[in-house]
Amino acid sequence: MLLSRKGSHVCMGKFMKNVMQFFLVFIIGVGLAAAAPAHAKMPSTVPDAAQSGADSTDATNIVKDFYSQLLDTMKQGDQLGFAGRYKKLEPAIKNAFNLPLMTRFAVGLSWSNATSEEQQQLVSAFSDFSVATYASQFKSWDGESFEIQNEKPSTEGVIVETQLKQKSGDPVTLNYLMRKDDQGKWRIVDVFLDGAISELAARRSEFSSIVRRDGINALVNSLGTKAKQMGPS
Image (cartoon, rainbow, N blue to C red; front, side):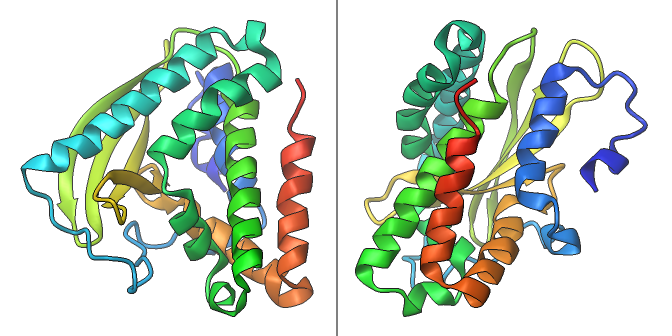
């Protein structure tokens, strides 16, 4: 679906292909479910973090710091290899993204039926899968840059609007939905490609299907298998 939308961009470079592949990991086979509204509602029991006061600039700083680490890793990508990129990106991703909340939302209603141990296994598997995906797809640098465009309030928190730019071809919009965690820190809870295609919506469709069909352990195993298949490179 994404590739057909981008088919008119004849100048798509190697890095842009990596970006598309990154999102296709979650969107292939999901169909229109991936094109959910850009502000998919997060679990209502999570403390309300919709306020966007003076400290909302901290949300932008979280994205800036993450981009700095991602870009630095890309520039060293060939030297680091998959394992090195994974090790370097893991703390950056866990700091920037609220992976437990994202796991809970992506799993859907089945989350509440899972035991505490199963929930921990899901968060761990989802986290490993997320880091492995970045380490696998963002593995080299060819002059690309990430730019912060804007920050604006949302009913679900704050949206940090950014663009990924390459030496040739059109920029790609990547917007981040930010919410405060239970310690008051802004963290990423969803990513929107082209400002509309929700990463979590795609994951939720896929994950819920696996859990309904085969159970929670099957999803944990599936995520673990996918993470292992991405490396080494």
